[in-house]
Length: 94
Image (cartoon, rainbow, N blue to C red; front, side, top):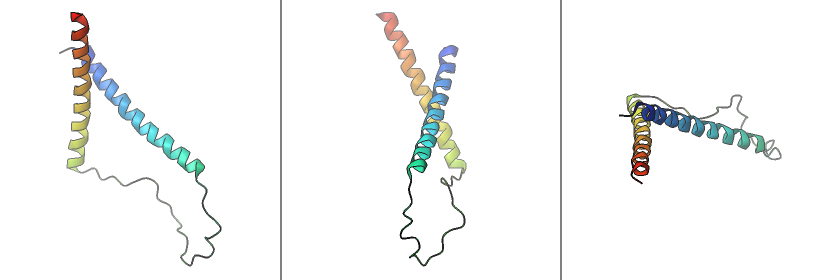
């Protein structure tokens, strides 16, 4: 096993996950900046407005979710490692 390639696989996988999370944050920021609520019909509503606003989703990290997250991370890193080692072998043959 190539240690440098294994380290690269873990780092690329971490960067991919961080990039995906950052993209979701940026998308949420853009959607929040462009949101314009319709204030013309709010006075006609009989229901009172909420005093608290919840952002995001609730994620419960039970055992199954943790196992699936770790397994997904390992599978993504293994796939990257396999592709890179296959590409190295292929270029060395040529």
